[in-house]
Length: 154
Image 1 (cartoon, one colour):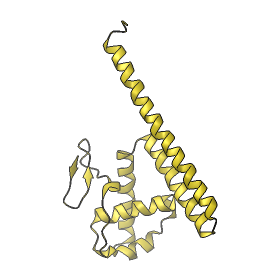
Image 2 (tube, one colour):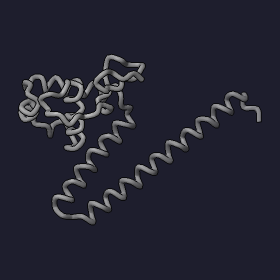
Image 3 (cartoon, helix red, strand yellow):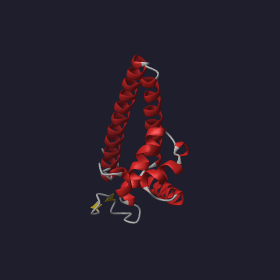
Image 4 (cartoon, rainbow, N blue to C red):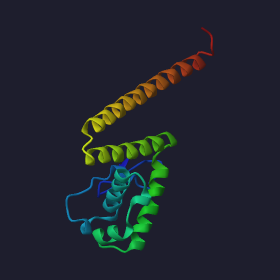
């Protein structure tokens, strides 16, 4: 992993496409953001809203002091980064995370606090199950490698 001067962590196997999820979003005015910081914040907004179609490009252009065409190019670069750095499994988790964030936000807006809390707890349980499944898969893979390395003679 390489870190650029503005905090972008790039994977060693693909230095051309930065991972915008790893960029720290600064507290300075958005019009002063570098393009990496701008794209990181736009990616965060996509996650919060649930889908890129929920983004209003004109409002973002005004926020960052750039053209709407630049925001369109930013969204293209963000999509490229997501495709490069997120596996199919991570992509599904990314989508689920975005939808749940939006759902919980909606429940809180409607003052459905118990439902929001229940949704958050169920999501936390789902995350734990995914983590345990990953650990199980890793142990199984190690066992299979051990058997293959032994030539199956046990």
